[in-house]
Amino acid sequence: MTTYGTAPQLLGHFDLTATFTEYMHWMYLPVAIKEPGEPVQFSLPSQLKFATPLLSAALDNEMERGDRHKYRYIYLTTRRGYATPGNPLNRPGWHSDGFGTDDVNYVWTDRFPTLFAEGEFLDISNDHLFSAQQFERQIEFRRAGVLDLKTYGDGEFMRLDPCVIHAAPEIPAPGGERSFVKVSFSNDRYDLLGNAHNHGLDYDWPMHERAVTRNDPASAGRDFGHTPLGSAQA
Image 1: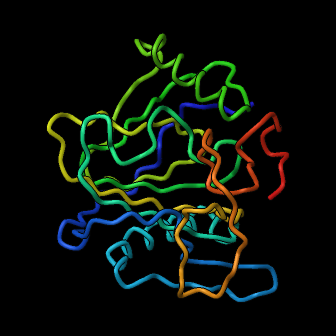
Image 2 (image 1 turned 60 degrees about the vertical axis):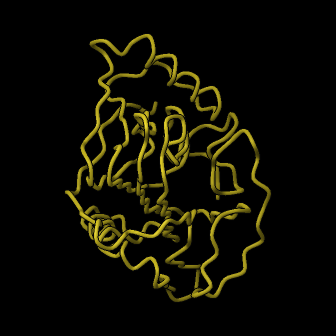
């Protein structure tokens, strides 16, 4: 049984104030690809060079954990815009990134930091939609003394596995500029329409429609339905 409600791994504070200034929205851009029998490809567009310290820190940490060569793909998500109450520029609601997979995500924000729910969750379903409802209900009714809601401050870079339950924060009025970076490690092709294409890499994936009711970035749908955790194939 998977234990949800673990804390993220903290990798330290990073200040990108001087380099991450442009408004943008790049979603799951492949920056490294290792297809079977082929050499590793790596390419980072010049306008995303500001993310190099975060990419390097994530790669170094995966190497230290012995997991660097576990994954075929590395993706980069970058967003900067004006966040307002009700629009934090990120996925709403309590959730797990990579639910039902072994994907790993590293996240960073310059302000309005991500909110985490740490503690014991009970009997969480392996269904993508129902589990999200369970996270919401258990946090609503069991937060006092059982689930600790906390943030880790502006500029903190953190490693999240699928057991880390988190949500975008409530943005206080009147809002303000917010920057967000995510580095994702996966063995799945994030091949949904709307995900960014890296023209510096040689690949041509068939892209698939994005369903309204789910947020899995890959068409394999490994985080959806009633498939037991760990039994689905990419």
